[in-house]
Image (cartoon, rainbow, N blue to C red; front, side, top):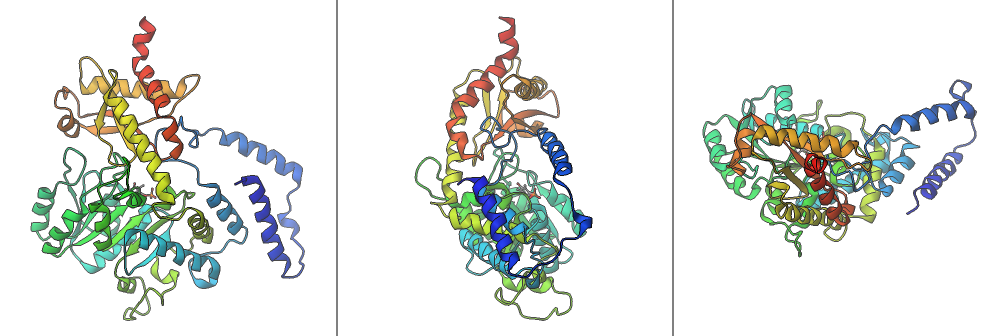
Length: 459
Ligand SMILES: *Cc1c(COP(=O)(O)O)cnc(C)c1O
């Protein structure tokens, strides 16, 4: 699709609609002449060059990429109207689109009933889930893995709840014996499981935790902010297929969060929270705490902690789902390509004399470090940092990211490395663009050369 063409169509479509309301005079206070605008616009586009090329396959760093053109057109078209999804009278059309898009997310996770809405971010979506958790288990805390997103600890603080970090195993997943020890104290009301940790993409075993949680009378919330759309690869044919148990088990969790602004091709400002039991809507209402809720009766402002939210976000997601629905054949194909890229690159790293794999990727995040002699954490840290910087500053740059691996986590995976420091930075590449699939050999080659850098200069 031609973005310029459709952006032009967008302006026309909204103008045609506006023209049906009769003429009026724009106020002079808002008028800006084209020459002045041109100068300011020049400055804007100039300043925007101070960015990393998130769209390009040579950007293989953080969880960043531009939205799909369909989402851009959906967002900008709707923004010309600027509906507010805090309530139905803020914009009935986008409120309905939000419900439809959220229903598709619920279907993706296999929820047979749900109450849910979009949020500004995964952080706010998780805050809402933890808020409901607190209302249902007052006085009891939250357990989450030590590798869970840092905002869980922060939100526990905001909500006045105690957070209980649970150690992880040597693949970054929650340690179930440690979880049971914590649950036995009776201090925990809700367990947060992460299906796709932000650092390494580790998937907590939701299916194994559900019976444990039930035994202890504890809720289960799944933070799938980053990983949620990988549900579409559960049991897929081909190398990209994922073991389905943790993904299918999300259907039995009490709540789940997913960020369409990560793997759902959306611009920032689009998270989502879903509850399996629509009755939890009662905790959001101030004036009528005893109303019985079904998902059909509620309107969005009554079930969200936030007030104003962009109707444009809902429209962008809705439009994207019309074209690339959250199904294995739709959006699933986009994630499959990144997953195959991660598997292929990991294989190349395993076969390399200059790089080592930190751990096998469970999703599309590749973690690795340069081979150094002698192998100490200090040397690995320095070499990783050097590769990151050299990569960005070369004539034909590539962009990676680093992740701080703690001493214990590192030596659990690589016992031969000398632990002479608290930890070490390693390299991390999130291959979330499907185009990565065609650039893995090139990326690998470049990172190998960077790893060899000082040696090459010496020759
Ligand atoms: C990104 C992320 C979050 C936070 O979401 P934001 O949209 O950045 O606020 C929470 N949990 C996980 C697992 C994430 O990857």
